[in-house]
Every structure is written in C-alpha cells, then in structure tokens.
Length: 130
Image (cartoon, rainbow, N blue to C red; front, top):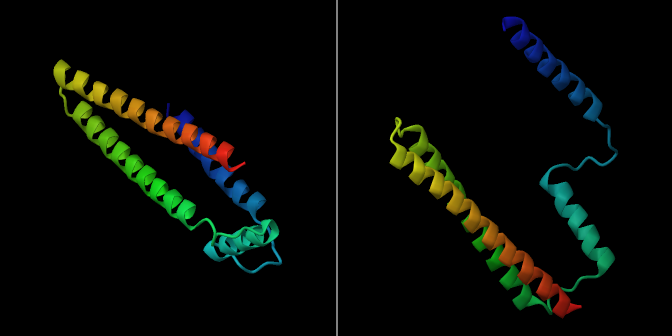
C-alpha cells in the first residue's frame, strides 16, 4: 500500500511540474487578470456595437436576477454543508441520517428547479427580443 501511495504522489508531483511548463506561454500583451478580461469585454462590445443606454431596465433586471441566483447558490451551499455535518455527527442515529439525506435531496431538487426556471425564462426572453 505504501508503494501505491508513493507512486500516486510521485505521479501527482510529476504532472504538476509538466502542466506548469506546458501551460506557460509568452504573450506580447502585458495585461493580465481582471484588466485583460475587462479589455476583452470592451473589445467585444465595440465589435458588436452594443448600446446599453436604451436597455437600462433590461440591464437592471439582469443584475437583480444574477444577484438572486447568487443568493440561491449560497443558500444551497449552506444547506449542503449543514446536512453533511448533520450526517457525519449522526453517530448511527437513523432518523438524523434520513433527515440529512432528505435535506440534501430537497436542496438539490430546489436548485435544479430554480435554474430550470431561469433557463426557461432566459429562452423565452431571448425569443421575444429576436
């Protein structure tokens, strides 16, 4: 077993070293991080000639929907962590284990419903815009 762990650890270290070497690229553009992302978005906006001044309400609604979806994601994460801790600390109590399982299943179903509703709304909204 010790040989297997040593082999896997060596393989992991070996792959990290070569992935870093193979992904290293020299670029002529010295911008990186958020500045590069912002610049690429501005370039995209200039190519498409998007005018957001007319779509102020649409932009604000999109921001609110994004905020709500972020909040739903945080709530989902909290429920999953709480359920996992409840399951781990159940100490063989079948009722607590069952309650934790149900919370995880219900949270996942709720998340799927919320994102499905968003996908349907986004599809219908894009059909009206076109």
